[in-house]
Length: 375
Image (tube, rainbow, N blue to C red; front, side):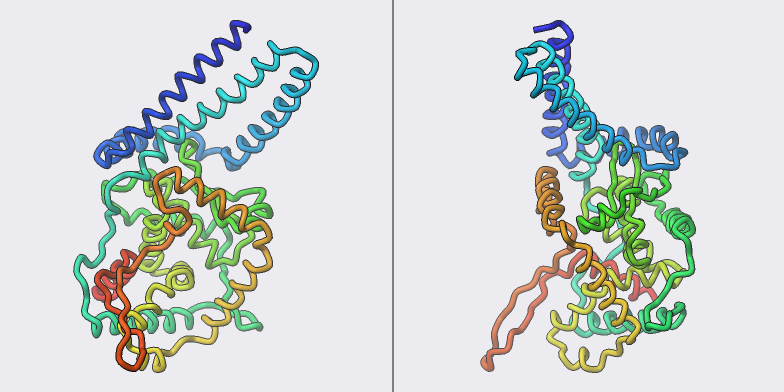
């Protein structure tokens, strides 16, 4: 075996051990919190400040080059093994494997620790509200949707339209994030970037992607504006040190729901309304559902959104499988981890009707309760 090949395998072994060390250390919540605040935050400020000045998404370009080079090298490796050029084949294989473990080391040293840190620091109710209060707060939430949608522009087909460009949306969301002053969040805010291959993201049903080593939040440009706004806010939360998916959603909803901009707020409504609509069922208040006023424009947008993604989810099952595997490798519950869960039990009364008993509302519900309780 050539010396260059041996050196690559030695380096690969070292980085593999470092990846394992990162994984084992991340199992401690205290270590993960310390590493996120004192290592990732410093790293993110330095690297993010540099890469942030590059207009394109560096991760996207790097991933394309990485895959292309690997495919070429795999072809060469197969060719060399067939032609008995074993030394060159092993050298090329060692180079590919070394590149993979180096990327894995960078990722486990940044995002890997952020997945295992302490509970998210967002203001929310820390007690169980009674059923009457829960319904009243849900009513306030839906009344706010009705009032907000009256402030939005609509087209002739009855759909709301956003007057902002992508750059304006990014700027507005970045300013909203300045209101998060807790030390839990990185105090540097990167600039979300457009993904050039958004058509591929749409085909796979992907709204955004964040790569912690480059501190970049990338988003799909082909989405409807309310999904785009929420996706940008979600991905930006990741760069701020919030890697768990449900937490990133919670931060995005909080930042948008407490915004004074009706378009940002409406985006959160479109994406979070199910949490509050479920309150009526969880409190067994079917009468409140009948009395609920929901704007026809809101219903039109929900239907339009459903049709939009139905037409574009050709490869979504593949994407979901890979994302589910990735999240499970990071200690999460898979794609289910995007959703904040309510703890409840179900009984059946004498008439056969299901009766819900809530023991704890979800973090998102408690966060929204807190917002409307403060109004």
